[in-house]
Image (cartoon, rainbow, N blue to C red; front, side):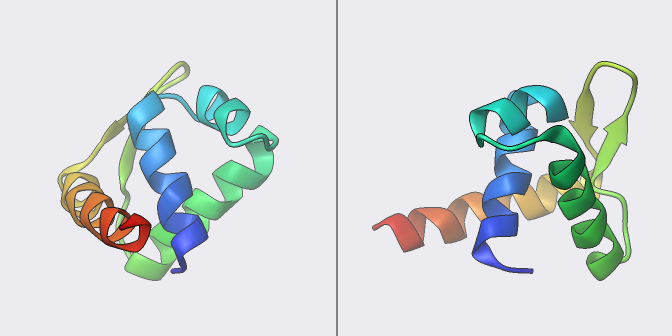
Amino acid sequence: MDIRQLRYFVTVADEGQITRAAKKLNMAQPPLSHQLKIIEEELGTPLFFRNSRSVELTEAGWILYQRAISILQQIDD
């Protein structure tokens, strides 16, 4: 997983919707969904509960989200 993927993950979590996150990231939805799938495969666990209109963090997703926020904040500082 790289920093770009961490930013994608955090943006999706913040927006609560992949389509809205893709717009915020100035990218199409399919490549963003693909990146999320790669992250989940790499970690071996789902990070989001998905339904037709939104996504919610799983327990593993919440743990990653907290760590990702910390990592991105350190990088930005």
